[in-house]
Length: 412
Image (cartoon, rainbow, N blue to C red):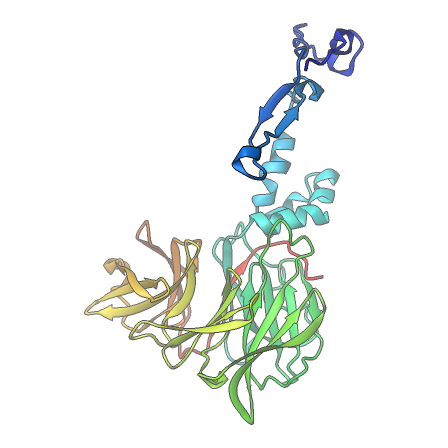
């Protein structure tokens, strides 16, 4: 049935849509007059085949507004603030706060901090710590990445760095009190977690879980602690949630292993925490379902290999020496099949004779390794190596190396 439409309602003389002329005097044409309601239909059948009724969705497109002119005179500063600044590391952003009062207010606003922590995910360097010493930071690019206090002296007591995730760092007090601190070294923002309900032992296996997302505006995070009770030789999981600011004990217990077989702290990605074990396995704990699983590591795994994330997937990087050359074997998939075997640059590595240890993978293309106390970044695609830090002595596996993202994320 036709619907009458008053053409005066669509005139451009005095309406809001009439003022659409640009500087050249050209005007946009008025919205077309729709004399009939347009019908977009679909069939929904009810009852028996003899009693089918057609139901149509009726849309009157005349109710929709006419064409609108988008803003044409966009300034370069608007493009920069919307499409450049959120993708920069924290160190660069701190410098840019001095550009103007407007930029200072923008960069320190909660919404921008949320944007930056969501968009900037590049590993910026490693926090390192020798036994008995204070932590220090090795930057992958000293001009772009950095922290104001590499020794974490802003914390109230000496700590041991334990685990990291997307800009947050978890530390443990050195006094044996099991006090955990969550901090962001770029902003020196920190908080001490409340005491756990159970004693985790002197050095439990930890995994920090923080996944920046559009919906995670409050930057909620969780700390997963895998430990064994003295009279209970199974692995228990106690979880701290920043959302509730409390600990809870998961119902799941792992009976196949005990915590003494977990080698250090874990890697968290895509909702799952992974720990390497001395038995040649991977313990996986799904944080959402609070269920565990056990995966097999490749043969030859040990203290010189490392779990890492490459191209969004879990992988295991295992360096070894064949004759006079170093090789990196990269395993992946749930069965940890060999994916790539990379022969490293013979000229650069020919002077080394010690064992190589894999530490982390940076942005899927760069593998961080160390030989003795020398930190090296190797670009897999370009086949080039760069010394990040020189040092003397051997690496007995006691030196801690934690990847860190130069983020603005707030702990509170």
